[in-house]
Image 1 (spheres, protein in one colour):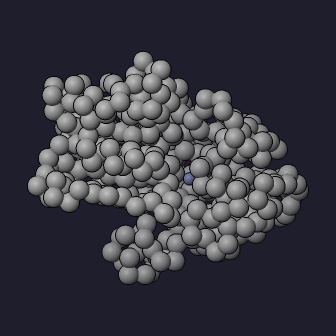
Image 2: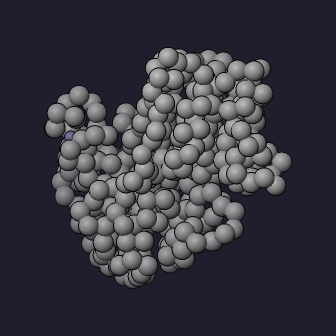
Image 3: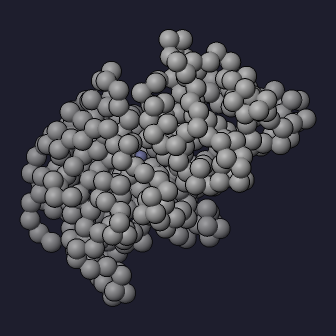
Length: 362
Ligand SMILES: [Zn+2]
Ligand SMILES: [Zn+2]
């Protein structure tokens, strides 16, 4: 397809440009998508700061950011067309972490650790534009019940879902979720869907903790603000108090806060599992009391990206088991994408997740 489109291109740290450009030309193995909604991810904010969060070559512009998005198919490349996989107008979302399918990791189905992974919106142009292209192998049709706004959050939900699968929740268990950003609020709902009997969400801010209650948390604990009605200085003691004198069976982290990870090891009892999913820094090092962990036979896991969960993700949204509406707190136009990024980065106002409405027709 030829023609012009509006984009909001990241040029250099702290500088984006709203401008007219050519619509990208697709190759035989690609699909052109007319963008509806894009999520603003924490990693977009890091990129805007001039750092590359995903080990990409430079972390510098010019680059169109945006890897969490939904839209409609505008043009189908020859390969997908020959298989009859897509037609113009199909409602879709994209798995932006595009694996190669040919390396040893991919041969084992460990697509998240593919050594040739290419990420839309960090290694090449993403979705803060009217059109974006992606490999047909990572374009997924979405069910009618899933809105474009919800589908734009499918990628972080996929990451949260993979992490919760690794948590291995058993029916009736008590689960502690650390963090009330978008992913933490998704996990609060997902652990319930996975069978948790009691869900306790821990974070630093009451705004997010109230959101967690809206998302189904039985109890919330503020571990920082002494003026909060939810405040507890000793989180493990508070969890035991809320849980009939017992520590939790599972703990999952959607925060980069290292002391929360340390705390999670103490909030769980013997023979339990802790899963870490957060934006860790290069200098972050965890101290594990080895003898205590050994005698308690603890399992500590890390979770990265979202292999093999996308079909489940769309069903979780369509069934209502996960409700993404309370998570989207701020909406911006494509023209105001930079304003949106700045707001998410700098504003002290309570907020969870910002999205860019590229096409007002949702
Ligand atoms: Zn993201
Ligand atoms: Zn691979």
